[in-house]
Image (cartoon, rainbow, N blue to C red; front, side):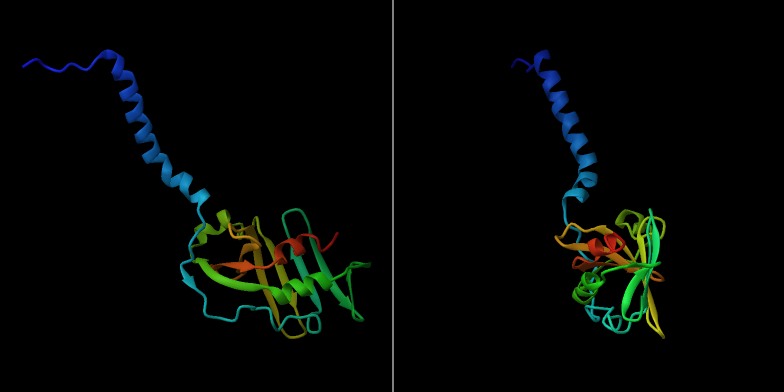
Length: 174
């Protein structure tokens, strides 16, 4: 019985095919995470709007500290101002009341940079009333429409939030 000999012409395509398969096996996990929606690690059983006590009537000050600028919006005699410039806050209060905290995405502080909620790259927002305040960091938009990542300043828990609060904060001073 004669031995089967692989022709030299087939060695190159077979070698390239095997190399391509190995490359896909190595690269696929890294590529996949950019094209899939992250699954949350748990559903949150808390009030969907943690800002419900911070509203148009109770707030006296909003501090925004981002990468490019920082400003303070203060309430004076029922109107809102940055320094002496009036600011329309109606859209902000509508967004704040429509804010919905959905899923806990991560508890690992190593994920803060990737999600945009680290203090060095996120937008820190502090809401102040006469006797209370809350600070949170607004991060990157999430893969889900009209949502973004956020966390409370003194917590490592990163949540997905629904609503347009992220985009409204970005236009507050303009």
